[in-house]
Length: 228
Image 1: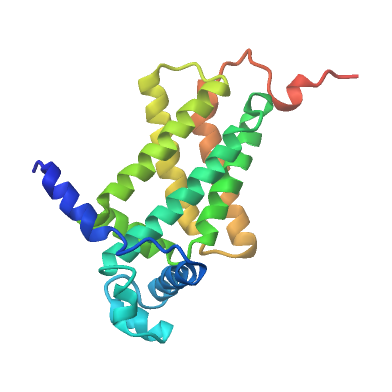
Image 2 (image 1 turned 90 degrees about the horizontal axis):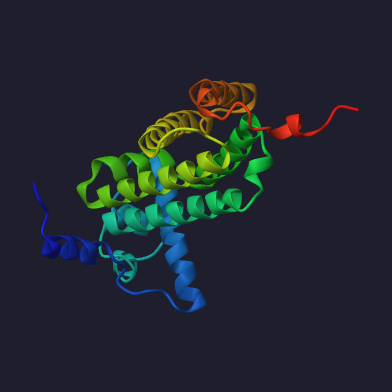
């Protein structure tokens, strides 16, 4: 079903914060609402999350929560935007590094380290991701997430010497995104050796997927260093 521009604008208005916090105290309260929502998502899940529960956990009135966000979905939307902002920052950091000097495995290690840090920092990530995919009001966040990661990966693949046309690069980027997204959600819920082994399995899967598409004549990593 085609969605009209007026429907999109109405939905955006419903998800927008009631006011942008300017003063430090207001910014802190908005941050507390988002942090508390993340904690409650981990504890009670998406279906049982309510603004009443958020207010109770914070020790404030529901009206105080509504002062910043008009409804539960608006809070989740703000959390999703915060998560995307963190992911954008880490991907930009990686893009600013000399990727051309890295071997594919070195690149994957750098990519996953930054990617994983974003997942580890976001409380209630799994329910939030489920909401972005399953709640119509949050679908736009899910689309923005995919577009963000795929565009970054395609540009990075080009710098790493991948020799495939844009449509194939897009396919590889989406496959990398879906694989990493699924596996990193597992890694963040594991500890110790299990977490390390799952991450290594992820690197190995990506190596199998991506290595055939690199320019074999392109020197990389330790291959650039001449033997004594």
